Image 1 (cartoon, helix red, strand yellow):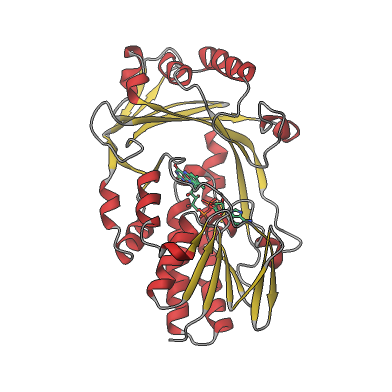
Image 2 (cartoon, rainbow, N blue to C red):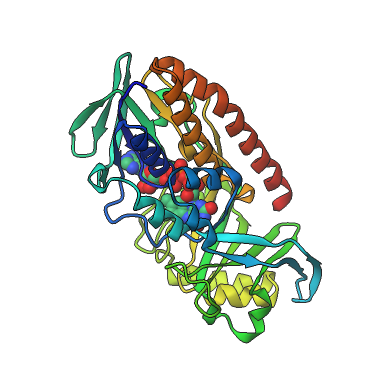
Length: 371
Ligand SMILES: Cc1cc2nc3c(=O)[nH]c(=O)nc-3n(C[C@H](O)[C@H](O)[C@H](O)COP(=O)(O)OP(=O)(O)OC[C@H]3O[C@@H](n4cnc5c(N)ncnc54)[C@H](O)[C@@H]3O)c2cc1C
């Protein structure tokens, strides 16, 4: 197998999966992550789909899948808080934080560089060049864009179609210690709970504690409230308490006090009382825009996109991490079985662009009935 110099832009799960798999295969790999302080402690929960479980086995992290909280059933609440329907459908939520930290521990530390934002990637016939925020440059045989929703690698391959398409709604999210839920809201625990009616979509479930705690009293409750926001109000929605605007989300701790008060008042009016209490218990909700994106091209001559940089699917699919895992396993297989880089990349794109489009379409379909 031919060994390549590979540089990865983005050090979240797609970048880490790629870095570990390709290091295991003997390639010279480095990961450049823009965040200065790392990503640990920022996630909630996710569903362990088959491609995720598969890659975890390949990189020796299969034990992470056991760090999860089981929701024994789904309940659908009426506006008055009574239970309209109960569906026996157990589902496990794995901890995003534990997953991230366990996977991050598998990468050779000297090859993972924090605070290294890339601003451009140039594609050439015999390699690519990364341009960093500080003006430095680095040549590589293959550049992997694992830089998510706001990818800077994407435009190098798709100059005329690299914008995420806004869905018309955002997700407000809260993540609170379960102990902060008042007694009147305890029906929410140990269940996947929903309140869905025209124009309203709220859900919530337990996830492990930030260190993977699974015992009663130490877990966290994650709620997600999908709310329509006209495109014209999106910039204001993502403007923080210091008047700084963010591109795709409003991080925890950045919401102004007035908006928090308004959110709580809306929750009392619109949501069942148990969910309104869960909203009340969150002092720092975050807001995430819901977008779709399909890359017309996943590959260039010496560049490839994986994960959310290539395809952004709505969160209702719960497939973002699994899709990234599938991309990385396919890329790793193509590089292992083909010495010619362009041919390996073409095989990769043929395999994964179909999957990416299907997942985005599925997310759009779920979204159409979600709100
Ligand atoms: C902090 C965080 C928490 C998350 N929590 C959850 C969760 O609880 N549940 C869930 O299902 N999904 C969660 N996700 C999303 C999920 O991980 C992704 O949908 C999926 O793993 C695909 O990820 P990705 O690596 O392709 O993109 P992302 O996860 O978006 O990662 C992209 C990475 O690239 C970095 N980056 C961006 N631009 C540049 C640049 N120019 N130069 C260098 N680096 C750059 C970003 O800082 C980021 O780390 C979370 C993502 C993040 C980043």
